[in-house]
Length: 354
Image 1: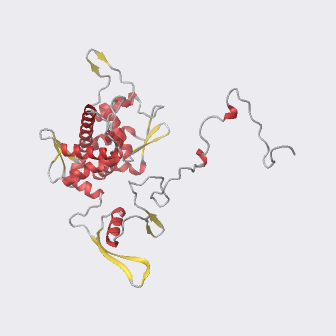
Image 2: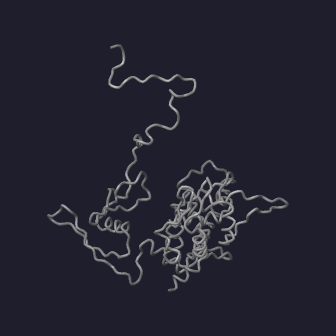
Image 3: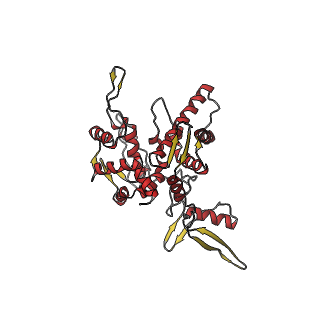
C-alpha cells in the first residue's frame, strides 16, 4: 500500500462506507417514502458515529425524531453513496450496486469515485427548510468544480474569504439581486459563507482537503492534488505522451493536417479541446469520436436538452410529446361528475345526415 492508498484508507468517510456496506448486506427495506427506517437509522448513527442527535433535548423539552430525514449527517452519507453509485433504490429496498461493490476494499478507487460524485451532491449536502434556502446547493454542479479549481490553483492554503467571494460572484452572475435590501444581502452573504464552509468540510472527510480554523484557510492534501489532477486528466511527471497526427477529411489538394503531443491520460473531452485549438476552430459544431463501432461525444455541461444516442445533447422540441405524455393527466371532460358522456361517432363516417 503506497502513501496515497494509506491516506485514503484513513479518511473518515471510507470507514463509514465500509460499515454501511456491511450493515446493508444484500439489501434493506425502506419506508413508503423511500427513507431508511427510524430503527435502522438509530443503529446506523451508532455504527457510523455520524454525530447526529436522536431525540434532542433543548432546554426542558425533548423533540422526538420521527424520520431519518431529520438526521443530516446520516442522510449526507447515504446521498454521497448514491451519487457515487455504490447503492441504489429498487422499489422499496436499498440495495448495493454489484459492479461497484468491490470499491469498499480499494480505498484509493473509492476516494476517486467519491470525489467524482462531489459536484452531484447538490441539495443533499446543505441544510434547507422553510426558513432557509441554499443557492449554493441549487447550483452546486457548477460551484463544486469551481471550489476544487480554486483550491488546486493555490500553492499553499487558500483563504476561505477568497472562496466566498468567488462563489458569490458565480451566484450573482446567475441571479438578480437588485431588489434586495442591505439586510437581505448581508443574510445572503452569510448563508453563502456557511454553505462554502460545509462544501469544504465535505472534502475534509474524504481526505482531500484540510481546514485550518485558526487562520480561516483551507488547502488540498497531496492526495487531493493528485486525485483532482487524475480525474481531470491533467498530465503528471512520468506519464506517457502520445504524438498524434490530425488530418482533415475530404481535403486532398493540399492536405490539411496538424501534429500535436497529447498526454495519454487526457479524456476525450480534453482531446476535443486540443483539436479545436490546433485547427483554429471555435467549437461551434456538433462533434463525436468514433472508435470502431463505438461512437462517443463528450458531455457538454452548458448545453440544455435531452441526450442524443451518441451521448451528447440535442436541442429540445418543446411542442413534441412522447406517447406516454401526449395527453395531460387528469379525467376527461366527458367523464366528470354531472356531465353526460358524449357519444362517439364511428370513424370514417362524415358528420351530418347520410
